[in-house]
Amino acid sequence: MKRKSFIPTVLCMLCCTFLFNACKKYPPVVPDNNVPNGRLLKTWQLTSSEAPVNTYFFYYNKKNTVDSITITQGNEYVFTYHVQRKSNGQIDKVTATEDTNKFSDFVYIIANNYKYNKDGLVTHYDYNGYDHFGNHHLLLIDISHELHKMTVRYNTIVHEFTFNDKLDVVHMKDNTHHPFDGTFNYDNGINPLFYVKEFYAIVVDLSPYYYEYMLPKHNASRKQYGDGYAVDYIHMYDNKGRLIRSDFTDIRHSGTQSFKYSYY
Image (cartoon, rainbow, N blue to C red; front, side, top):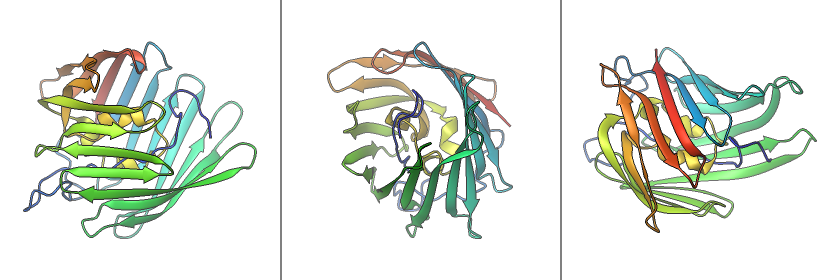
């Protein structure tokens, strides 16, 4: 299903959880309510010189796991991801709806058949996509979790992520229509998206471009492509040490950009 700039392709976001366990195995399991005080993310706004403004609004249950995420795209599109959970807190189903001037609460994605490993990490789900002509397509999303490495596969697409001991992505490689094979450096600031538990398994149709911003624990200071082209990030923090804005220019993806964050 082809969608405008913000949702150009189906993807599965990988599991990014947040504390080391006794064996320092990546990724370790985190209790549902283990978000540090004052770091529960409320909004994430993305502005770009080449795309409409996109804003994520996060809503949580009492355990600080996501109940729903609403995304606005410019003045035209509103998408909402509704999460149904089992009694143990694991995801049972995610239903994505579109509300525009032409379509109200149109269901364009149902993700189900979620499977977890013994560490409580998602290893599989079925992606059911629907278009406005009544067509249905199915993708089977498989995720593997190894020491310092995570891989997601669907159809012929493969995304590979290598992590360091600080839970940051130091190398990313994929074979999408905009292939990337490069490395990252980080500052010591905490990435607010890191504490949105199972973000990868809820908003399941983002561009692969957003992988790098959702997975690491800290905020990237530099991204370097395999051919040497580099992107530098300027981060601004509040008096509580929380990230409130990031500015950067990536001429290969969406030009000059700013990310803004707010908290509950």
